[in-house]
Length: 239
Image (cartoon, rainbow, N blue to C red; front, side, top):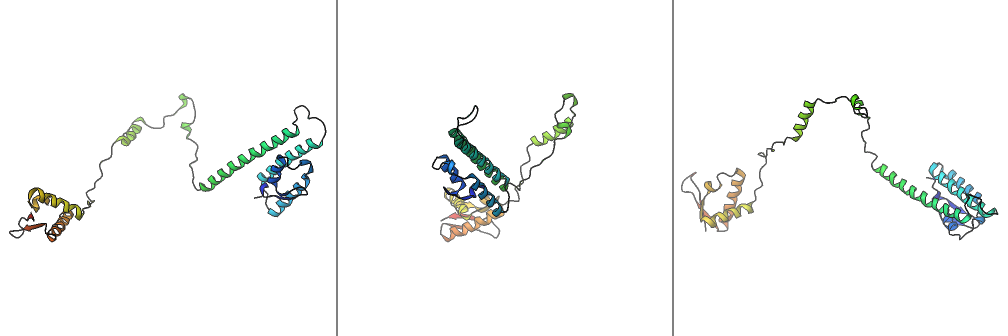
């Protein structure tokens, strides 16, 4: 990019970037009458040749600024009061500063929009004209698009609550710690429990974890059980 801010100048009265020269001139630290604007133009042309590319936006910026500086310098060098509708030297300097600030504001806004475009360049939006039936037209010329019954049926389907999902295939999570608490609470209230009566309606996973809980309680000496006959009822007692 051949931005004006990248232009380095080496003049008799100033050496540095072009932006700094503008700031110095507007603060009146250097008289514009001492600055050879022709040398600045030549330096910018050499800058363009070295860059090997032409940025029309940057060139336009440079031309606007140089034209404003030429106008300001001509008002300082040419004698006489400004005519009707013309600006004085101070007013011209203020206008140049306003132009610079306005350009900088729009330039920064353009950079922000460019970054947004690069970030969201892969997002594609549907671009299609509306159907002829939906374009602006007189009410008499409007054409019915959908049948009322078909439209009502579609809206009715959208308003109908869907059935509850079937979760029978999902197994509940059973923890050994939780089953220990359940068995302890039953033994505390009843003293003894019938395993089938207390846990016969539970699923197989819960029953299996409950058996592990009983084994853990037996190991800790908190419970015992009795089964008087094979495949008979199991009576669990608290110790």
